[in-house]
Image (cartoon, rainbow, N blue to C red; front, side, top):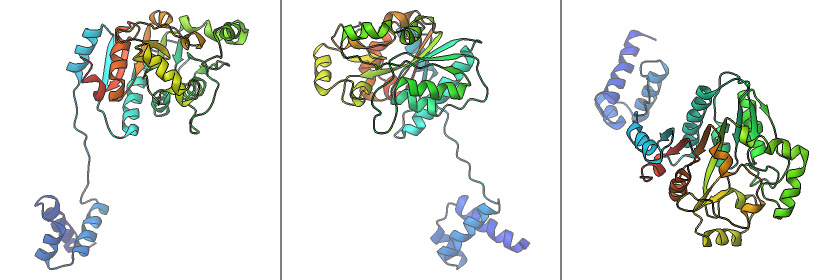
Length: 312
């Protein structure tokens, strides 16, 4: 390319990017077509004369994070900006979770993982550059229906997370919700199930979802409960759940006929785990998240501003 040609490209680029002239204004000024201006601007970028760099503004949520930590007595709160794009939210959650796992890692440690779209979406986007010698367990039953061709059960997420960590993954071969409490007791006596359930209180770090009571909660999506069951839970003043442990507004476990049929890590067991990490987003989960924090089982909260800004 001749020097004169480079000068011309540079001139068009200056007029557009520094003088803030429109493409039509440049066309009129240089007595060329607007299409020609467009092509010249494109060529300026291709030739490296113009480089466009997008920089997201840094957002400091540390003040709010500290207030939430002190108010609810938790170890750590990580807040990311909310977004209309779940891809962006999951990427933020994934970075936070990967950082926590890396910092907390001890050789041979055990990680527990719950179910649901939020947990799956987060784990899917985790970027890990090294392998971890650890074990990954589900903390709720895993078999059942696949929702909209999207397997959000704990066993599937365990497999996904173990693969990313280079860890050993284990599965829980039973449904999350059994037909009856009596059937649940029978399941728990099966050696292959008992072996996994016995690990619940030995887990070092667990990743659990916070749910609210509504038609898009995981156990309704997977058809483990019906619409009338959601009405029943609401009638008991249940505002949400921590890994399918149903709680009221004060974080107290509420006795109900569904809870007695669930095979999962209990609230009492969660209290014994060194680091219980809860992940949640969306305004509909504000009351449930506040209640979950009051339950006294969460050590680390990863959430977005749609929840965090209203928790206090």
